[in-house]
Image 1 (cartoon, one colour):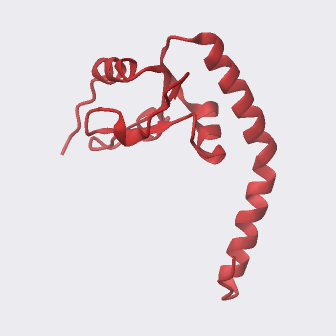
Image 2 (image 1 turned 120 degrees about the horizontal axis):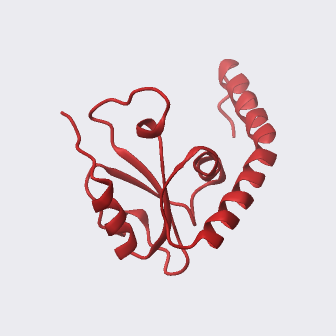
Length: 129
């Protein structure tokens, strides 16, 4: 089933919910073609009154990440590669994007080490934390 994405509807819903800026990420923004049934992955930031993602009324084809509370590994990828949908607070967006990118890039080596250690544990049959 093909999904028709209406970015104007998504942007209007995010603004109505109080989002200050939003970035698209994921398969619909990748260099290669996305599947016609792919959802629209959005990361949005709120200045105040930060909602849970499921409390924001969006079309069913939208997968929302609330950037204010997203884990660094995900927020960093969105800050690095996301495509701007709208920006009602450029100063906050630039600050969030710069700080998140720096923290993410600083943390990548540690993340890779943890993943390698965990993979090695699983390969040797150790399931401890």
